[in-house]
Image (cartoon, rainbow, N blue to C red; front, side):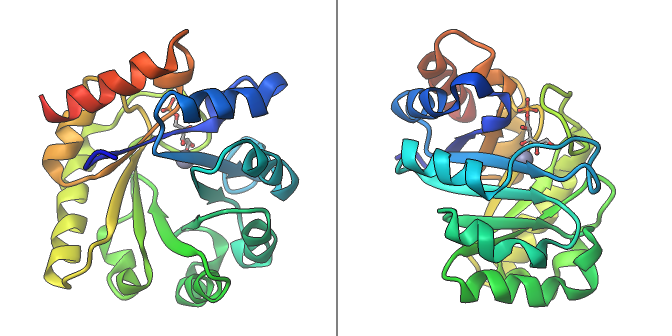
Length: 222
Ligand code: DX5
Ligand code: ZN
């Protein structure tokens, strides 16, 4: 496994052959699979529930990283934990923000790695007092809801700030970038301190997933 983890986003897979596409991206060298859960309320799009995550679980043994873009995530974390997730990330701005600490505790009590995602407008300060409960922090580099959008470079100072917060606390938190990652945007992310990279359209919109994953790894260190 490389120092930087590549997490293809299943959002850009072919849903008509979802299990096959998950197996293919696994065999192509994905480190983690990133699964975007959308409810049509927190974001203007709807994707999968726990039953589909369970089907993905059967197709791969790789780490399944669930990104919950849903309101009231505390109502669903148990179902998603049972569906076979390895890590569950909630959005800091979801209606449970007032109980962000509680929902992270819920996820950990279910035996899963926990994390928080920050929308582009959200400051790092939102996670200051819950960082020790997070194995992963996602810095959104697009507005959540859809694949194929352009990377927002103005998020890079936020990545630096979060990496510094983790270092100050002696935490080995993984800092994940999500949105618009390709062979040009990954390197600035690495330089800012991120170490896990979600890539949806860049990987799945190509005929050869392995070639794209290799290109990302190369661009991360070149
Ligand atoms: C956006 C999702 C992303 C998305 C990334 O709401 O959270 O995970 O799949 O897609 P690309 O890599 O195409 O920007
Ligand atoms: Zn995502």
